[in-house]
Amino acid sequence: MVHATLCFVIRVGASSCVLLGKKKRGFGMGKYNGIGGKLDPGESPEACIIREVHEEVGLTIPAHALRAVGEITFRFPFEPSFDHFVHVFIATQWDGDPVETAEMEPHWFACHDIPYEKMWQDDAYWLPIVLHGKTIRAEFTFAQDNETVTSWNIHDRDHVSR
Image (tube, rainbow, N blue to C red; front, side, top):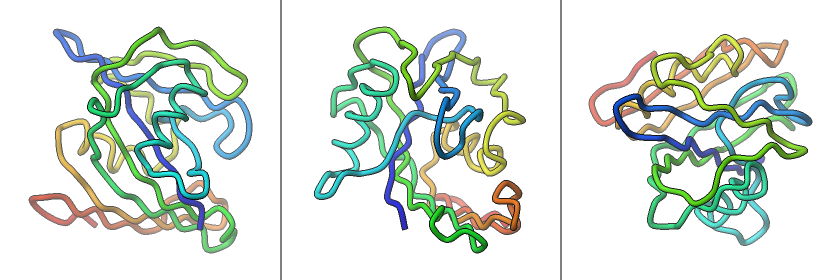
């Protein structure tokens, strides 16, 4: 199973916005997502996400500005090499401006206008929960097309969704 990280950079204010990146290559190409990537051997999730955000969109996030908001397991029974365990973070402080790289094309979206139809299907289930301040532990299983969610569990502080 691949161990990875994902960060949603949030601009807080009168009109809150979230930074999403359009994946330009590799796993999830063409989809919008948070910024992140695979942990290097011996690397902590926090060190990984700081490195990945800088590499993929040029932002520097101080460690104290990260808030862990979830752990999600993604299962692909028809392609087990796609299985991921992902540490999810939110950051509301950073240095720099987002820049396009070979990996990602960054775009700001209003938090009330996130393009879920252009993202992984599971994002619509759990991202609103973490954007509303909850911390989750979740698991998603995908169909043979490796796109369609067939089952899920989301545990937050208040209840379990199925």
